[in-house]
Length: 298
Image (cartoon, rainbow, N blue to C red; front, side):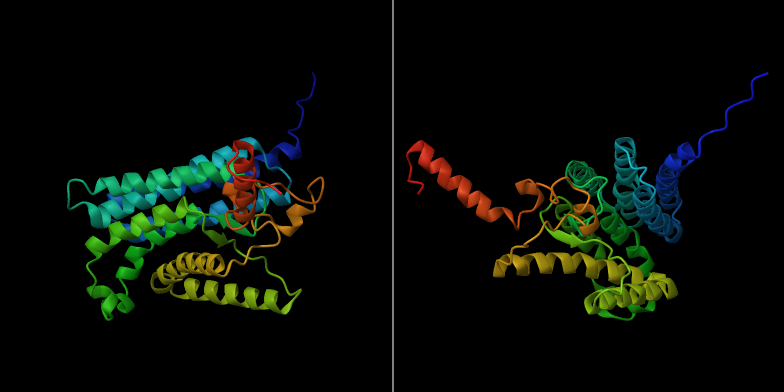
């Protein structure tokens, strides 16, 4: 009798990142279920834990070199549920279900999250990156999901923040997050822990300090930290645009990933890096005027 062949270790390694991706989906679905049961604390935890799964599946795929087109597409489909639909449903059941048409904010937010993920697949899917083109959907989703946490703390109730008309403010917050996801704003990726330079040490210490604060008092710190991240990327991009400080290198490509390219660099489309595209756009306009007789190109 012929013995059964052992499953190859490679197959098990390939399934590992996809297992984390499906774990993300599990938390996303249960976040919706928990929100429908008015358990908004646990619903927020499900979205946050889904974010942890989303972080791990990409890192594991790159570490084990088991990334695939299937994994990229699966990850985006799952993220659409966990960070698009689930946070919007938490907002609907917690705050927005007092008006007949408030569900349209949930639709618009989810639609922008789906479009953001589709653009991510075209531009950055499967690559290590230093920046994201537009607000990452996990950051946007966790910002909405942790609002209810923050509303249950003394920092919320004993300060002016608690006196704000949040039933009117939150739809605006959802619209801002939606537009930022499909915008050209560059957001920094989570930095790698490193001690190679003083700046790397500062970043590492800062990230560890923030993580310790969030782990120590998640209900009080998670929402403000995420709001600060959202504001940081927006302010930094606006500042760079005003002073016209164009990046000298690809802002969406990690240094380690750059070394694996055939010629040492990757070609980017204009929409992928709006800060670098201005000169190219002006050059293209001059050529177009010359061709149509509207001007001379020297």
